[in-house]
Length: 262
Image 1 (cartoon, rainbow, N blue to C red):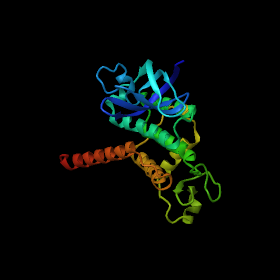
Image 2: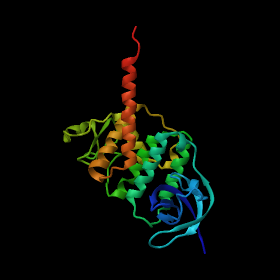
Image 3: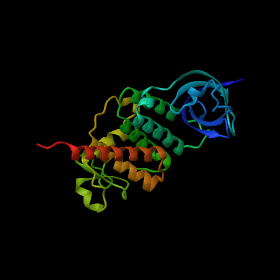
Image 4: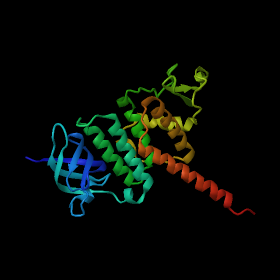
């Protein structure tokens, strides 16, 4: 009897001359690797349904160990925004990459499937892509074995006033105790506040969030440090995002230099 399951395509890679290996985050069975025979052939009827970020209902064979197989696709959708917007595409791939890194294959993780599916929906609706990625970075930290104290000062428990982040002390510091870590990150307090809010809420509670570029850069600086130094995860999609932002900054600087002066 065939298995029917919901899935989000995480990535695909070529296998031999004409075949594909496709990793899909399924709601029912966790992350699974599927062998797609003749998947690279122009005649393969489900080629469009195997593209990264496609959400679909699949029918196939789920094996307890080894590779699984797909026989049919009931319905599928790849939102156009992920084809047209390279930044949103990269952020969504990064979110899926984080889930992939945090969990072993074949382990049911329905919660994270639902979160990823909701993230796609929110990104399509115009929600800030980086903020969504930051949400996942924050909420997946415990799954990587990293516990951070975001909501109150790690020294005294104070939750009021401007905060900074201490990587050494694993959390935020109130202004009264900034001297306890001479290497604190000197983060803009607004960025710390937004990170605190993202760490506190459920994704279903996030309806709108408007952030300026400076705040987003500070948020990324904190989370990039944590993931590089403590988690030890540096995904290809994140490197691409960082390169993309650097390129945008260079273009902006070049535009300023070439702008006419009075």
